[in-house]
Image (tube, rainbow, N blue to C red; front, side, top):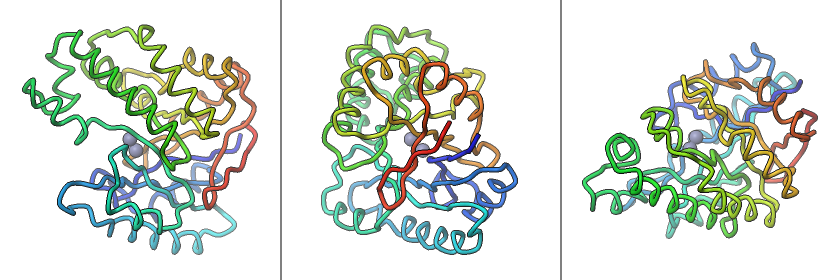
Length: 274
Ligand SMILES: [Zn+2]
Ligand SMILES: [Zn+2]
């Protein structure tokens, strides 16, 4: 099986640990075919984010791509949040990236919403808040993700069940996911209509939660709706987690009926056999 990890953070992300070069070295040892380094691109108020880290990442990848030519395809992307990019938009899209991930996270978009109730973000909200409140947050999350899927200039919709990693993974609240299928289906519809890719994010496999985001049941819904375009992403923030459980993911995907994974070069989609 060929391994294309389309979602990795380097030390150019505020929460990433290893350099692009270290990531590449280990990826070659692990037998990967390609990596896409996708550092966070999250515009903050008052120009805090100036994108120098993306500039640096682009440069790191350029050097690594040359150094490891013929051994590993090294690509550069970014993980864009669903925040309105405003004045940063032009600069961001000028980077000429290989792949843009579209994500919704819990900060800062939710901060006002949470503050009203005395929570900082989904992490602490999912510890203590009543389930009804958490359900509202989840619905709001899927509304945002659907907007990204239908309207944003991104290639991949990431970690579809991200909030559940906190609600059920870390905080063991046991919130059922099935009641949110109408909202989730709407996101999947957006992915399909705009021919984006749906990411299978394997970071939850590194936890005792032990789940893919999304899980097999949701992937089957996507498949039954006609969805075929997928990427695999470890969302590794440290190199040890590169391509976590990709074998298991490929097996699950093939059982559902998927035959190919995708990756992006200069925002054009290519396929490989699972
Ligand atoms: Zn993310
Ligand atoms: Zn990420």
